[in-house]
Length: 215
Picture 1: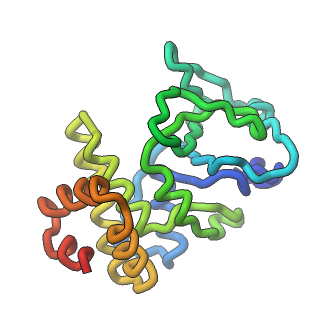
Picture 2: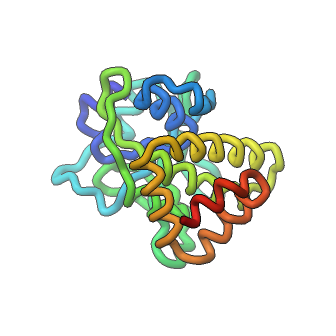
């Protein structure tokens, strides 16, 4: 990440995925209430359109760091693979997007369009992590997003892991007034179908939290 920061590329990326929990824990004073998920995958969300004025060669930067490009066929989804890490890029899906990949010209990478990413793009915070300035989703919204995504998981173990980590993070956010206010507002203003997914999970796991979330 240091190299991405030096090339002024991190300003165009939002860290998502399991690494967010590690960043949140450090940001909030190493709170043990925030779960830490160890993962070799680093996922970046690219808010589009990219606002930078010039074009960056992100694949070249990653190649110089020892990452190899791996393409999944037939959909063409790209990953950048390193012996210790795997990087993948996502963009918010627009409308009824059916494309498997979207080329982000100003960064030179192909990203995977995914639903519900607008939640994260609209709620970003900037923090310092190990000396590097990072953009991550606000934790309350990240937890809500993760609850929604968990409802699509087909593998029970992955679904359970998503549910439990999201619930723990949301329970922590209830102790942070600014985050809880945002959580309630987000659920109050999101599309009904989205909230029904959140409510369906919380009804099983923590009905009291769901009641509080409804305001």
